[in-house]
Length: 382
Image (cartoon, rainbow, N blue to C red; front, top):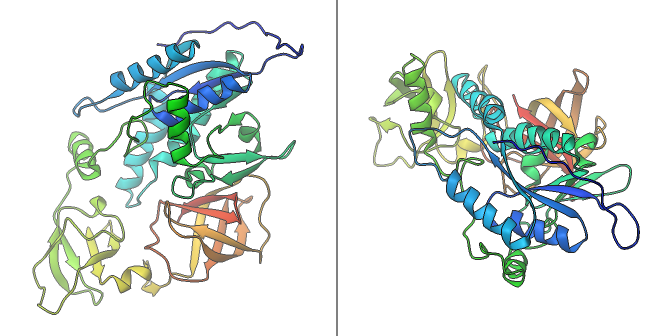
């Protein structure tokens, strides 16, 4: 259900027009506190629950989440709207995710959810309905005047800038992150201070909007219904010898240590981790924990130092070749030093040299680039 909102510009006591903000109310405490803080700051706030596509074969909680969002809006005495972005989410997030897995890559759907839905379809609709800004409960910060800088959230355990690397200057100028300068315990305290009905609600986990799901079960359902089948395949060791079997290469992510069966394991072997996979041959290669730090690149080249990324986006400025930056290739991973080796393809491709080993570098995941607290951008690992 999408309801057009007609707002007339209102003036605050000082005579200036009040800025209108549409806040994405997810039903959680972070977005609820964001709305309360914006009201306190003098903005004209409307709460928006974004309804997205959800599988019809698993338990979905969107009605409960929407109810919590409505209760927050009622408590804050602000307008509430349900925005239907089912098609945008299905096309931009789910279809993308399934296509990436089918190609042997491991996508990051939360990044695409932010790009296509929260700061794509949501902003487009909000702008048409008179909004000056959209706001969410993300733990990140935006600073600066005419030129904006995106910064990591103050709470290092909750910082979500990793998922926001696709934002550009055009986006940052109309986005607000009201809780980005706060630590989570302070947000909880404010929720109780504001008397919010969801002040004690636990944080959601899992896939953006959908929640916690078993990715293998999710993939298996759609592969089966698409007329394709996951085929049993061979597990190889680093020497190429067959040592086990698995249910299908597309189900595995580099660094994973579950889901495959080792049939030639000795008492001296430790745990095995996936270090490479071949979609055409339907094989996965496994090694020790030490080997996961050296991703097997196609062509029998072992490397963790040089990483290529595509679909690169720069939030403010394009890094110069030879410049030193910091990167992470997974959420909450420690930042590691890197050097920009090359930028090409109208700035949409880049190569970086990592200064130390890291977690398995997984094609399809995001490599996000920082300079201190500032998120400079990122790209998809090739």
